[in-house]
Length: 250
Ligand code: NAD
Image 1 (tube, rainbow, N blue to C red):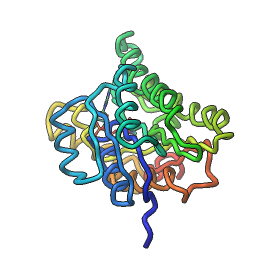
Image 2: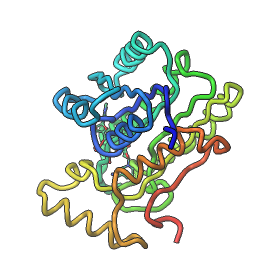
Image 3: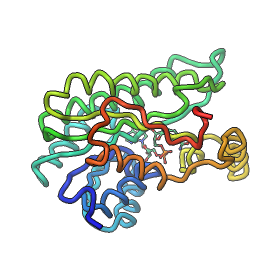
Image 4: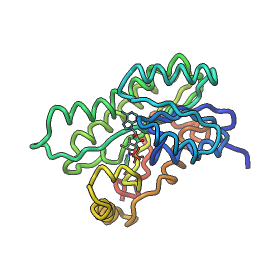
């Protein structure tokens, strides 16, 4: 079977962990060269080992615009072109409305929204016509989950970007779509509870809410990202692809 991303160059933010890492592995298996950016060098080194080949890691914080510029200068120098962006870097912090601080609000919007916005904007001089952008949102933006008001709003913002960016970039045949996973088994749960037992309990709780009675695997979301990034989705623009075990649909 022919590979779906032969000779494509992709930038994957948050590509050293979870959904981003699974996506990087899948894209390389499909023939792509990937650039991953993440904050921790040790985690990037591990990810490069795991991905194996056709990968460059750039250490940086996507909420720092100079780091995004540096990322694209590396892409331009090493490959001279860019076909795909997957903006997967993101954080979740659970806080009730009554307890939320301005710092919580700003931190989530800075990393989940502002960084994704400028990750796309700053790619525009390098991104090929016909390129594909995948913004990793969340099924949370479609429902009301207590303690997730700011997080869900950041993901609703991404969903909105996919429509407006697509409208602005359609002339260049650049498609922008959001991918909204439901709960997926990634290291993001390590930020949700201090102990392994606590993390497992949260995963079980979320699994119980889903019609499929299980949370997702990063590889399942990577498969959806591959669909959106490749020509397989050539007639999909400005959509929000749900991969959520039925959470928002049944
Ligand atoms: P993860 O924690 O495994 O991966 C997120 C990655 O983003 C990490 O490598 C982290 O270091 C990186 N990151 C965070 N802030 C960054 C910054 N400022 N600069 C550079 N890198 C940064 O989590 P994941 O589950 O793979 O999450 C990936 C995306 O999927 C996130 O946007 C998340 O909101 C979204 N999502 C996850 C789930 C889930 O249940 N796992 C569900 C819906 C949506």
